[in-house]
Length: 237
Image (cartoon, rainbow, N blue to C red; front, side):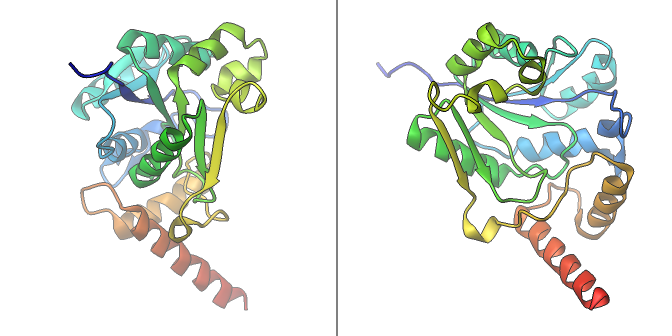
């Protein structure tokens, strides 16, 4: 008989209310919403077995059909206490390892998610993340045991809203593994998250240029961003 099965799950958090850009997860990018692009990209992570869209009661009806169409389970949890939402989802689906992503990142990279999982597994880390990629392409990887402990112990509202700070603020108590992505994927000055109207306009132009009906590979995103930056430099020069 084999050993105990290790279950890796993607938990994508999404909500409708946002002070800077309301309903940003439902904004259109070439015929699909921001959150649908995020789900489609994460589905390409072959080492994950369970895919979950975790939202709050007020937002659930807006995401239900989209999640189902992309092969994601819909999980409903507390609106403000996102740490509890993640912990409840991890318990409900029996996860051992969680890949955390957010629904305002339509260019979240399955390539970087795979690299982050490798980083976690090599170190048997409680928390792992790759740095220096464009903002909006990365994920966080959390061992379920550490996540459930954080849920039990965290009191700071910031730590409960943002899920992972309780762990990485305590490197003396938890095994933290954070490392730059491989060199070819580094572009830390670039931004591809959707948090403001300016972000949305920028990402819309990128999708018009690159999207052909399937998730955009990180290499293509990086090439676009480097060309864009070079053009701006030439103009300013």
